[in-house]
Image (cartoon, rainbow, N blue to C red; front, side, top):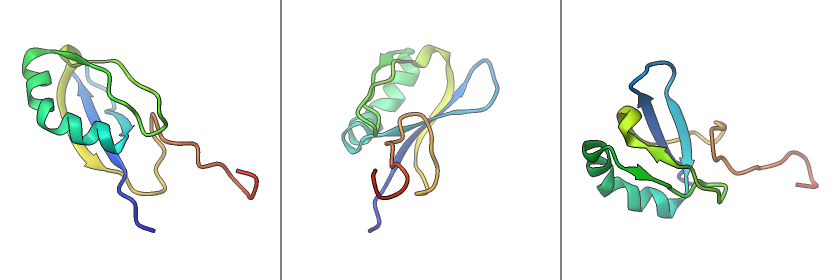
Amino acid sequence: MNETRHALILHLASGGEPLVYALSDRAAKSLAPRLPVLMASAGVDTPELADGTNAAINFGHVASAHLDTLPAHVRVYGSPDRGVGFGK
């Protein structure tokens, strides 16, 4: 089964490693057209993550942001807990 895993990648104005969030399908579709507006207005948004939680993001502290896809083996903020073994 080939599922698409959506990611929001944020490069903070303060530097350092980028923050990567796994987004739900609904959040990725909703955020795609609004991302330029959030960046330009330094807005705040709370997208739904793939694990069902939300993250509050203040785009006033973000230097650059983009949406991408994640490989199946990568775990980032908001990744669903896939578990290990037969019991999960």
